[in-house]
Length: 226
Image 1 (tube, rainbow, N blue to C red):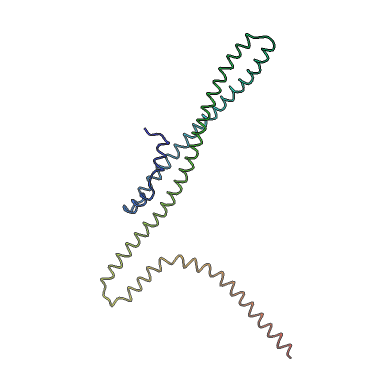
Image 2: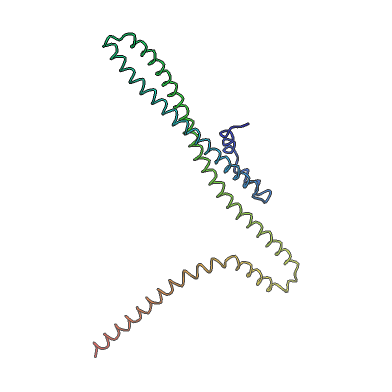
């Protein structure tokens, strides 16, 4: 059974361009939706695994520090025993020190190994989150593209049927085409109209003010001439 890291690597190796091509060929988003579901499932599994490894890292680090501190204290105690002539106790303490130092070294090596794996999983999680964001964005673009393609297909079918009409109905066809295109531009027109209303009000206000100033200048000039 492949590990979570192997599954994630498989997701990274997926060809997004090929996926988009298949979506276009099948006129469906199913292949992209399935990929998104796989990424989300594996991202959740990766986070669980990273949490487990992260907990192990903390445990190993704590055990290393415990044995390292015990070794340092025991090392100082051995010096004290030797200075007091307690050679038998010093020898026993030295043997114990050797054991604790070996254990500390083992915990240190395990800690470093797990830490490296933990950091690798965190980096992989960030990359997988980035891949998920990208594929979701591409899915939305693809959805819009498929909808546009379907709209064009309907319009093409409609226009082909219009070709069968009598040429005397050209004016009616032009009117219908204008109606179709106006539907597409309608929302943009509303937005543009809304933005222009404010600017027109400003221009009108400024324009009225300018006229008043001009009339006042004329009054001053005429009254001054009198």
